[in-house]
Length: 354
Image 1: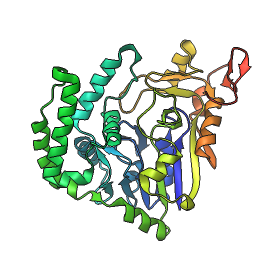
Image 2: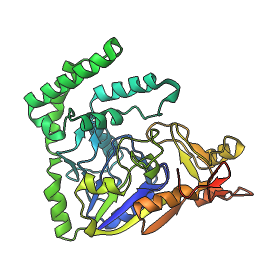
Image 3: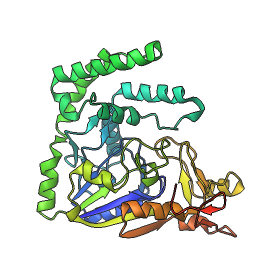
């Protein structure tokens, strides 16, 4: 049976800590969407581990870990993260699998991500510039490259050259990129990557059929969901419950519980609406006391009071069976704590998050 852990706000609610606790009983920990734009921090035995592309279930030496079909994989960052964890004494050998249907994030996508942010000017999204958005755009446009394609050199090279040419027509000389250089680097990555790649559909089917304890590690959060978040200031994948089923081939009938992680106040990174944001000394105090800096980018997080309208909206979409409240102690030294319980526009109360 599966336990699903999802963020209920704009991310950074503390999902990694809960995953670390639950992973001690998990046979398989799986990521269903996103890429190395995620960031989960775990402190164990005095060491701090930062997870970006890889599932936090790696902290449990008996747990297998999967990057599902809905994940976007930047191969050099994948290898670099494995190496960094190894340097801290974490043995990941034989415990990481990557779906052959996952899409590849190229350095090309990362360059395009930065150019698109510049193109938007003052209306920029505030992305991590990890290339996740352009990769999912390629996926939706059906000109992306999947992990399986990497092992068919002719197909791989043809598709990557076509992708580069399309971007070259759009951005011209602004795109400083050598497609042949990236193709050459993948000749090195290819044999190293092969040991991790698996057809995740039969893997998931077997895990469910044998009653394995499956832990799903959601990334980002509902309010960054492509369909239900504060569009267009969202990520480029489905961060809610729907993304779990499409990204992992998990049966809805095999779900034991859905846990929504709620921070006792609210934070978000990047641009976009934030009704309870405190652009004052209270926001500064929340930021400093809560050590609110992004794991992936190091950016200072925007901070504000708990927004129950957001949590209720999130509940209506993700159907949590329980909530995990985090970082309540950050509020210990506040003389007064405020909570948003409703929205009104021109004096008219709103039924839900608009």
